[in-house]
Image: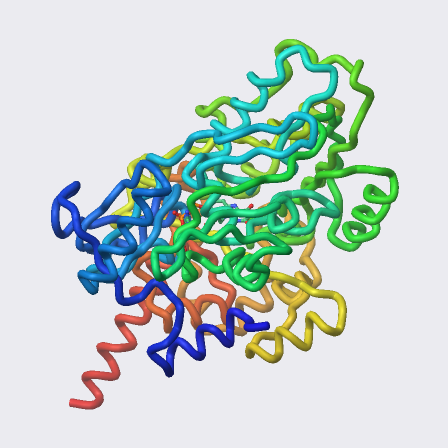
Length: 477
Ligand SMILES: Cc1cc2nc3c(=O)[nH]c(=O)nc-3n(C[C@H](O)[C@H](O)[C@H](O)COP(=O)(O)OP(=O)(O)OC[C@H]3O[C@@H](n4cnc5c(N)ncnc54)[C@H](O)[C@@H]3O)c2cc1C
């Protein structure tokens, strides 16, 4: 059976690859030369030839066939949240799945639902709740991505997404079958039995194998779950996960302390898990939840004062321990479109900043490690990402200083930057803090991480690098 890697390698050397490469598209539905970008990182501005929104599977078939005749490549977008630009291609015709969001069928006896691939999680969940009002036994989705909701089912399938299930396999487990319009414009039903190879390749295939028009999902019984929250140190984390799983908890996550200046950085975190409870357990009216304004404030603190952000977040989470939720809707959460623009304004940013979410897989088993080394990656332990623990001089922690003075004295660059540190430390929270690091070159970033220079010292570091460059240029002259 062909793997995705083999497919891509074959595609790079031969013109016979089955990817949707040399196809074009007729039609006059949108303007030529449209600049599109992803929603979250906004780092992928791409000029596509045009954007087309098919409203049915037949329209997708026509689109692919006429694209083939025209000889123009296609790209495919759902909710446009992928941060690597996988949904766009320069000068392609962009197939926007946003008009294909209907529920096509719901089998309440077997727990199966058929949807068009452009439907997004909130609509799908709303449909299920409404369709099962008063039912003694209801179905819900098993898992979705966390952190954003307006993601399409086609996009989840193309990324083989995962949620925060403690023992769930990724999204592929929830997919019974799908319909894919392949490079010839032929709709193919793919399942574990039918077109099995295509089924395996297209899930996690990022749109390379064709346009998915419809998906049949296997649902899970909709149950009530209770949240339990603890603050944990990293050393206790894996045993705690194991205990929770053994005790029947089904969902969970761990949110790290993110202040690199704190000795708790990537060591302490908020551990929240959810376990099924009896259907009769009430969900209290007016349970605590964060409003969009609360989230905005937390996001601001997460940039301006990460220790305070962690404290506020932990306080809130601990106060919700014991609250009861539904197993499907507890996976929804607020996502503030364009939140970084508001943040940039509040932080007085000179450049627009952004954030990327990265994922680090840490296979503990040998086969996983071997696969990682095969693709040139090394398995790392969270511990590898943490600064080494150093002895804390008395009082240093209380002053919020994570790096001992002795270490700083030895480092000439840090010594040079120290005056800047004292001026920013006492300033009002946020006023002086840099919004991420858009203006930092790779060299500066490497220097910064090698010397453990906090983000707020980046302007001073940049000035230092510029000064060094001027000195070098003067010497060369
Ligand atoms: C804030 C945030 C949180 C996230 N959290 C998680 C998480 O918890 N777990 C996780 O696994 N991922 C997570 N992701 C990543 C996310 O799951 C993927 O980027 C997903 O593909 C986005 O879906 P989308 O509908 O926005 O797809 P798009 O961004 O529009 O497209 C993504 C890919 O899917 C392809 N595609 C989309 N629709 C179709 C279709 N109908 N047919 C064929 N190909 C198609 C596109 O060509 C592209 O390659 C997160 C992303 C963000 C921005």
